[in-house]
Image 1 (cartoon, rainbow, N blue to C red):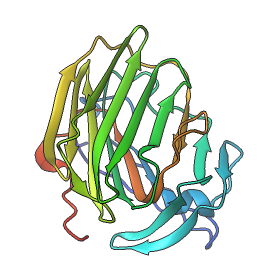
Image 2 (cartoon, rainbow, N blue to C red):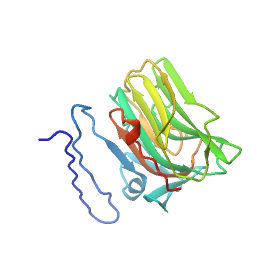
Image 3 (cartoon, rainbow, N blue to C red):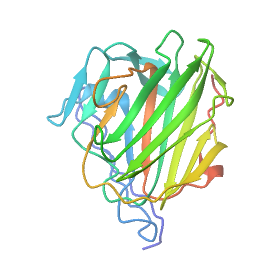
Image 4 (cartoon, one colour):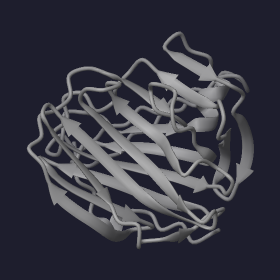
Amino acid sequence: MVMGLLISMMLIFGNNFPVIHFTKVDSSKSSNSIVTLILSDLLNSPSHNRTILGNPRIIECPYGNAVLFDGQDDAIVMDTNYLIGMNTFTIEIIMRPDSDGQREQRFLHLGEVRGDRVLVETRTSNNTDWYLDAFIKSQENKFTLVDSTKLHPLNQWYSIAFIVDRGSMETYVDGKFELSANIPFIPFSRGETSIGVRLNRLNWFKGAIYKISIVPWKVDSNQLRNYEIR
């Protein structure tokens, strides 16, 4: 079979069920599969391992349907940590941070509440701009990639990427490199996933999220999507 062949099978059971994609990935890169979370599908398909907090709602966006979080009590929590066992991964989020939210907002938390974890966050500046904050903790090691001078206007759509490659950390906004660092890293072995807030229900996100992708290898920067529609 030709390496890199993509096989997609869709099973559609009605409006209240998600489209299910089965994907064959290049085994030379990872034994893990790509995880693609279309957030509107998560709301439309109740699951025993998923908890909906507050009342996040589906809205239209330039790429399809997104989920709007009110910045007060809306979130989606899953009892799965999609990063377990990975020493290399790319997280890409298609999202729109809105104005009038908290200054510090944790919109993606994977791992444990206080132990090993990844946090992808925004910080707002004067309610007009935001900047990216990406944090990782691996056993006794932890590091934050953040620069308050790298500002982006609120109320617009962005692609945000956080790449970890055996301890090498990089962040990108709309495919453009922002920051990097190195940290001793051991793959996670447990944890959960929270979208829209930290796992301990602090620092709620105000804005919309269309999609979260987790790829079990380092995606080249020229393959990160640049969302020009605002």
